Each structure stands twice: as C-alpha cells, then as structure tokens.
Image 1 (cartoon, rainbow, N blue to C red):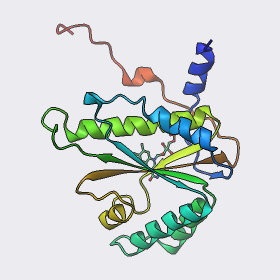
Image 2 (cartoon, rainbow, N blue to C red; image 1 turned 120 degrees about the vertical axis):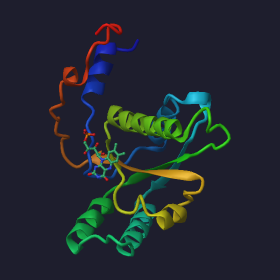
Image 3 (cartoon, rainbow, N blue to C red; image 1 turned 45 degrees about the vertical axis):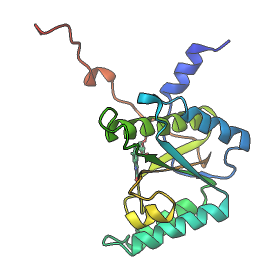
Image 4 (cartoon, helix red, strand yellow; image 1 turned 180 degrees about the horizontal axis):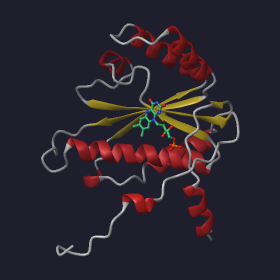
Length: 197
Ligand SMILES: Cc1cc2nc3c(=O)[nH]c(=O)nc-3n(C[C@H](O)[C@H](O)[C@H](O)COP(=O)(O)O)c2cc1C
C-alpha cells in the first residue's frame, strides 16, 4: 500500500544537490532511475529522449576532460579559477546521465520541436525525482560545453538530429541537502472562471 502522504511530502522536499561523491546508484537503482524517465508525458508516444550513461571514475573523467577541452577552445573559455572549481566538482561525481532529444522531423507539423523538447525535459525531471526518492543527490547542468556543437557531436549527439539538453550529475550527497525555501504557488496562480473575468 502506497503511503500517499509520505510520497507527497517527499516530492515537496525535492532539491537539487550539486556536491556528490561515490557511491553512485547500483545497477538496479540506475535501472529504476531510467525507467522513471519513461513515465514522462509524451505527445504521440515519440519517446524523443536519449540517454548516455557515463559511469565510474574513468568515464566521468573522460567526459569532463572532453567538455573542458571544448570549452577552453571556444570563444568563451573559463577563467583558471572557474576551470579549477568545475574540475574539482566533476572529479568526485560517480555518475552522469547526458540527455538529448532526438527530433522526429516526420511528425513535426503535428508535434513540433518544442513539444519534443518538453517531453525530454519532463523525462529529465523524472530522473531528478527518482534520484531524490532513492536518496541520491542530483543536479541538472547545461554548463561547460553543453552548447558547443563540436562537443555535442563528439559525445554522439550530432546537432543535425539531436538537441543536447545537458547532463545530470548523480551521487551520494556530500552533506545534508539544505532544504530550500520554495515560493508560494499562489504568487504564480490565478483562477480563470470564464470570459467575463
Ligand atoms: C535546463 C536546466 C539547466 C540548468 N543548468 C544549470 C547550470 O548549468 N548551472 C547551474 O548552476 N544550475 C543549472 N541549473 C539549475 C540547477 O539544476 C538547479 O535547478 C538549481 O540550482 C536550483 O535548485 P533546485 O532544483 O533545488 O531548485 C539548470 C536547471 C535547468 C532546468
């Protein structure tokens, strides 16, 4: 029996956590996290999301080095300070899931690119939620080289076919995750009661 109050309480407490370390999710937990992404809303059941799992020290470091190489060769290289802090961050991350939307051009008149991006973003949110539910820290980043086309191609997301949406760094939180003060939904919400209002 699902404890609905506990489930909602947990959902309301979701926070991103950037500072993570090993251990990352087990094989079984990783499967659960990725399966959670399959529950994302998805117009036309296109399943536009594509995931690349980058797991373990060697793979994560190769991904990091490739990102930094492209960033430093770009028109907007990091400062030495920013480079050092970004390297220090990724040095401890045990798992990265890089995500792209594979755009289906056949259906684009009915289900446009924005909708396909939204479905992929929703899948990424489900990954964040699943990590949180399992007690892992997770952080969605579009930093470093995410928007550099040569980097996108290098990791297998050729921009002709894919829209790279960034990566999620996942692991054991390095410290208790601080609970953020969230805005009140009422500040973002009005009632619409008909055209007379
Ligand atoms: C599409 C997207 C890209 C993001 N990219 C970055 C990023 O590159 N750097 C960063 O500091 N935060 C980035 N964030 C924000 C963090 O993932 C996180 O949401 C933020 O720190 C607020 O924490 P919260 O999720 O607990 O509210 C991004 C969020 C989204 C949705």
